[in-house]
Image (cartoon, rainbow, N blue to C red; front, side, top):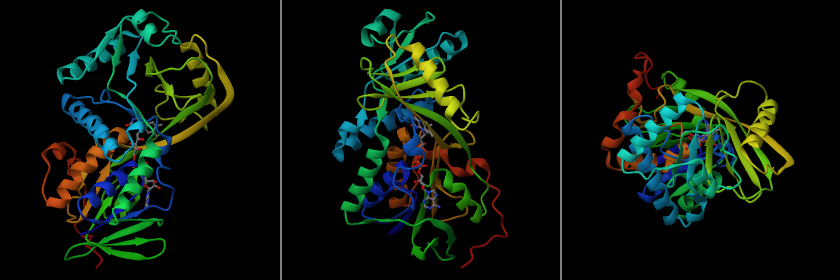
Length: 370
Ligand SMILES: Cc1cc2nc3c(=O)[nH]c(=O)nc-3n(C[C@H](O)[C@H](O)[C@H](O)COP(=O)(O)OP(=O)(O)OC[C@H]3O[C@@H](n4cnc5c(N)ncnc54)[C@H](O)[C@@H]3O)c2cc1C
């Protein structure tokens, strides 16, 4: 079976590896460098706390476990920094939500620790933890991923099987073929394939338009600030009130601000400066250097916040795999979707994430052009 994968972010890379591992021939298309989309501008926290319902949190937890398994298989265990996360808020509603999420995680068998300020300071002596938060929640199994290295390595491992081919071309449209398969057009030529998986992050909406599907997700920009940090090492990923930060290599911090989830206030410079002053307040010894780089990233956020995975309604051989929290979810989504494609079956775990839940207004008059 010849499968085209559109997009070489963490999702397309994960799919290429799993499809090739299942003896399928893979053409992976992207005219940009692997991991240069949302994957390369991500905070890249591997977490299950973003799972807002027990089922979704369970799915995220399984994805987290699978990451470790896969990383070992491809010799990249060191890209996963299972350093743990620390979360707190000094605001009562947010504290309540945090404790609800923590209790949900415990109910799913995940390890969660409830720390006093002093306990947390023993673990992270350079944090200030001001404002007397009621409790600090530690999730030791969470952490972060070197997402670009992981993505590139998965592509290399897929290509090394001899079954996957990385093609530096942009997919411009996909035309389903009446008796099976599809013709995939690029900026250079066209390819006849048995199946296509749309894994191009925010680029997928444009391709859906041509397939007569309504857009399935929003584009959600956000600014992360990378800054030089020469103080005592911070081990955990920290979520303190509205800001989150972690180390990013030996002498830098990466910082985001949930109060500007749209990242729309400015070109990134103001948000960058604000992040510097916010993180300064959270550290006893800020020791921040001169170098500050604000980077804007845009993530695909499905309309209801949950992943969109599976066959496009009305399109026998065209699949979609787009999600928010994709750094955490992509390898697991790829594992499950590959099983579906390989066995032409349906994987129960993905049941809640099907694209048809949005009642796609498929234009019945739009028939395949071949
Ligand atoms: C600021 C920020 C913070 C985040 N924080 C987290 C976090 O803490 N934890 C977490 O799990 N997730 C986080 N995310 C989300 C996560 O980064 C994304 O969900 C994930 O990277 C999406 O991966 P992807 O491969 O689907 O898309 P992308 O990485 O965007 O890759 C898509 C690729 O497809 C290519 N492409 C697009 N259209 C075409 C086309 N027509 N033809 C060929 N190629 C095409 C693009 O060039 C790109 O390389 C964050 C994202 C951002 C921006």
